[in-house]
Structure formats: structure tokens, C-alpha cells
Image (cartoon, rainbow, N blue to C red; front, side, top):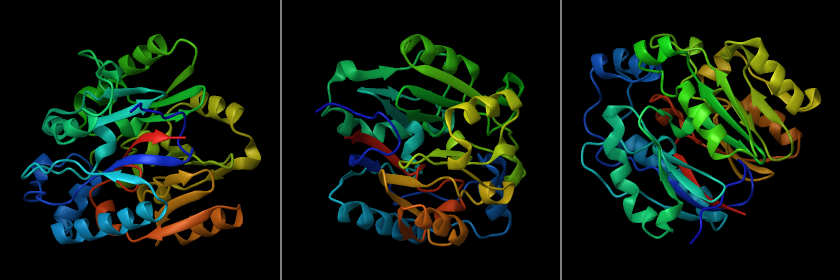
Amino acid sequence: MNFSIKNEFDTLKQVVLGIGENLGEPPSIENVFDPHSRQHILQNTYPKENQVVSELSQFEAVLIKYNIDVLRPKNIKSINQVFTRDIGFVIDDVFFVSNIIQDRKKEIEGIKHILSSFESQKICFLPNGVNIEGGDVLVFNDFIFIGTCSEYDFLTKKVGRTNESAVDFFKNYFPKKKVFGFELKKSDILIDENCLHLDCCFQPLGLGHLLICYDAFKNKKDLDVIDKIFPTKNIIKISNKQMGDLNSNLFSISKNIVVSNKNFKTINNILSNLGYKVEEVEYSNIAKMGGLFRCTTLPLIRI
């Protein structure tokens, strides 16, 4: 088989969906990776395994309804394997294995059996120093958008996941594509002041629209680039609060079908009125760990 991802919204044919079994104990407050998890550990509302498994099953049922081939990672005991997006990603016909934070390195072992069914020469291991997670990479035909952070944030904050070297790498790897790095605001503590990944504030949709939180971007020049690519009439702005609630972390099954949290009434109504079919799924417990629908999916083939 061949990998094939040109954008975020062509018709999905094959995807790796995370699993919730054998999550292990909730992390200690010293070992949390993001402010969502931190808040819910402090409030004693961190999700239980059965809640995570149930929500992933509801999402899987929607995917199967559309005849999508849903693959699952091999279960690794006491490892959180919910957020498959970050461990790798496909651009065109190449699978890139992410250089992720040390605490998550073992997650790639869970999908090796899946990758083995594809051509090995189309699997690229990123060089040392090129740090990136899949949530920071969005493909849009001839464009590649990458969420980054400053060197200071990368070195000092747990939520600093993707560095500028990643942007340089992909500019060289895809010389014919337009590759843009967007520096995002980062906070280990404040949910509404932290954009963990680009897909937490930026989501191109199949009918030409863009969900975006302008306040998540550090530099006006990056917003100027975005405004030149997406027509003003097609931009759907979300607030810091909506960003913190992960309103932009939707998932496209096709150009006009999206999966969203059933609690996102405002965004869901807007999208429905614009011609999208919105499949609503309860994902509120998974959101407590800092990710939503795009975070739990790793698309391999869209056509």
C-alpha cells in the first residue's frame, strides 16, 4: 500500500485511532505535559480509563459508518496511546516518524505492525535536532503549515514541542511546496494562554473555511500570511476560551463531513449553516488530557 495525504479533508480511507486501554496511573503533578492535564489532576477530575475507552469507541463507530478502515495501535501496558497524531504524520506519500519528547518515545512501537504493511523507503526518520509532533503539522495541498515555538520556550517549557529546525527541514524536503512556520503562545500553566499544537488554534476545512484563534499566534506577520491564503469571508474566528476548549481540534472525514464535540454548540451550528454535516461525539473526558479528535487520529490514506 501507499501512504497518501494531500490535505486535511480529502475523503478518508484509512486511519490509526488511539486506544484507551492500559493507560496506567494518572501522571503526578510534577510529570504532566500540558495545562489541561495539570488542571484536572489538581481538581481530581482526570479521566478514568473506562471513560476514555468509551469515547474512543463512539468515535470509531462514526468512522466505521463511513466505511473507513480503522486501525488501532498494539497495546503497550501502562503507556498512554490515545494521541496517535503526534507520533508520526503523512505528507503526500511519505510517513514521517516524529522526534517527540522522551516520555512518549515508546508510543511509536505500538504502530510498527501497521507501518510494516507500507513501503519501507517511504518511511522517514527525522534527524536529531529536528523536533516536531504531528499536531503541529497541517497540510493544505501545496502548503505545509507548522506550529513552532521560540528556542527559549522549547528549552524551558514542557509544552514546547516543535522547533524552528523542523521548518527548515521541511522546506528542504519539499522544495516545491510553500512551508510556513507559525510561532505559537506557550504556557505550562494557563489553558487559555497555551496552544499546545497548531491544530489547537488552526484548522482548514474542506469547503474552503478556516477555524482560527488569532490570539494564539505570537507574530502579526504570521497572521498576514494566513489572511493572504484564506479569504476573509471564509475565516471563522474563535476566542481564547474556545481555543482552550479545543473547538478547532475537529476532524474531517471528507470535504463536507466533520466530527466535533457535541458540546461545541456554537461552532457546530456555524458549520452546519455553512453546509457541513457535523457528526457530534462526546469527547469531553479525552479533552481533559489536552487533545481532541484530530489529536487521536493518524490518517494514512485520503483520496
